Amino acid sequence: MLSGDIDQDDTTDAMHVTTGSGTNATAVLEGFTITAGLTKTGSNFLNYRGGGMINDGGSPTLANVSFSGNSGAAGGGMFNNDNSSPTLTNVSFSGNSAEAGGGMYSYYNSSPILTNVSFSGNSAYGRGGDVQLLQ
Image (tube, rainbow, N blue to C red; front, side, top):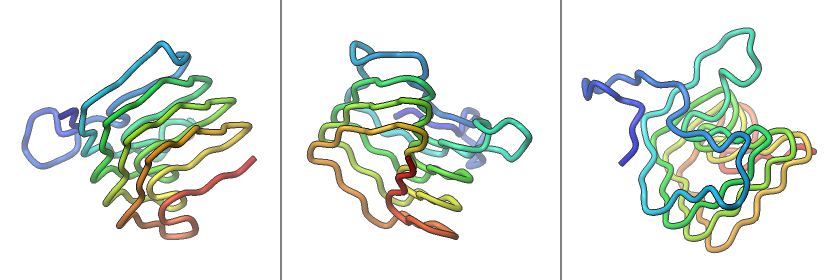
């Protein structure tokens, strides 16, 4: 498990639990649960997006991964930005929350490739409880 609760006191300590920014498909993340990411608000656009994972100009490969209990302003589970097209196989998003795109949010020419990916129980204050795609 990869957790944003670094000191294990049931409070979130890390903004983005993982990042695939600047990577390509040879960067592989396999067999993990990603949890307890909480992005902060602020003036930096990326600081409050992608509690579980942020991909800014990156397209990693993920297999057998679960995103659960992450939150942020956009893309509680995962946020994809600036031509990011991660490949996800056997990935689940559950119990993540955000203002938009509780499970996943993709923005600015980002097109994730999804195979056997499930979204359940994610929530958003505004729009896209599970997935929000803006091009």
